[in-house]
Image (tube, rainbow, N blue to C red; front, side, top):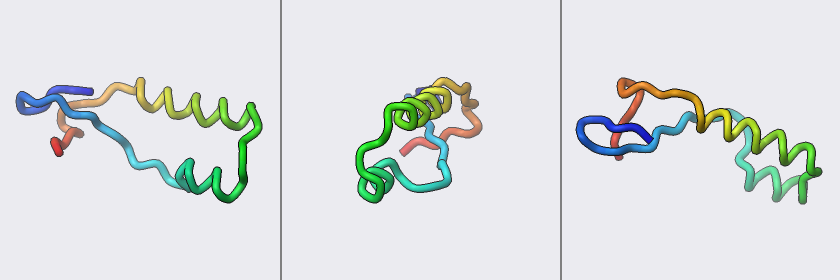
Length: 58
């Protein structure tokens, strides 16, 4: 979450590939190692710094 033009906004980045829902529907429950890898990538993306120039308020 960042502040832009006086408003707090959540900035997300588009990730290529299937959504988690699509993966679970097609592949079923994930092995622990794969679930952990997906969670790790997601948390690193959330922790990455953002700049106000890349923000858009919705």
